[in-house]
Length: 329
Ligand code: GLV
Ligand code: GLV
Image (tube, rainbow, N blue to C red; front, side, top):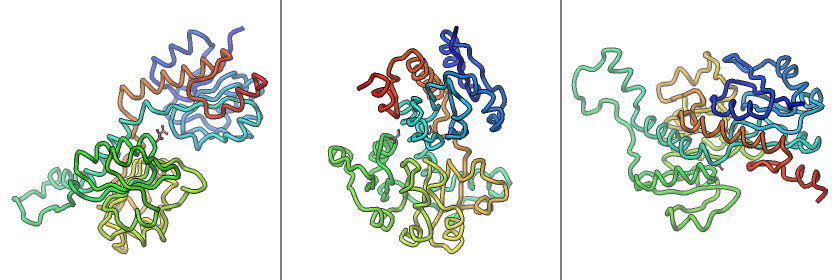
């Protein structure tokens, strides 16, 4: 009998087709994610789950999925998966690293340029008919060229941002739990402790996973350390920032602006006071949203799932200990 796979949203066709060659595939057809009940009914008979970052995969969900052998997450971030619960139950977990690195770095850079040069405000200014003449003081922003960039997190995406920033002669520093000495000379970037990173950067861009260390790292205390002229960019996970503290810091002029691709929760509520501020730019979690990259993510997520259900080691396995256990190593 063919194995069953549940896909929690219509990912690009190329990935669905690959899965259909091997499995009976059910795809959740709505624009909104499946409710908990629908997720439960979709997963209960499934051998494989292709999940999105909007699906919370935890122990209580796994309790209703006796056949489940793999969860293939269509994202590089996997804070939506309870990895410990998956591992405990011998269920493989995979993500989609690498394929979205450059596209995400492009968006981080777009947000930095847009916030620094007030692009969204400027475009609205023209559309709303306010443009009267060239003005010496009109819509002044900040220079990116030669400015100081602080990267909070220096994995693949942070490094890809640094490569772009090099072309803008930015003076770069980073903090990461893993030091990358071999890249420091190549990219002209210096390792510093978080407090120093915050205190000396004109732009701080977040490229870290969400975990116990990074959750609400950017809070009142962090904003107090940052320059009053600094702009904060987040393309990682919303909960790395305490949004209430961010609003307060911006209101008190302790920070110059923020550009966010991710919020906590998502979607950001329409009533969120951050949306009333001209110096806050929010886009709806689109960092990996290019046609080519979403196709690559679909192929990668499908390959991981197929390998896992065929008893091979998936290329992007997050919990290799499950595989070793199955092989009795
Ligand atoms: C998107 O946020 C991802 O983690 O891929
Ligand atoms: C994700 O790709 C990262 O390691 O930055």
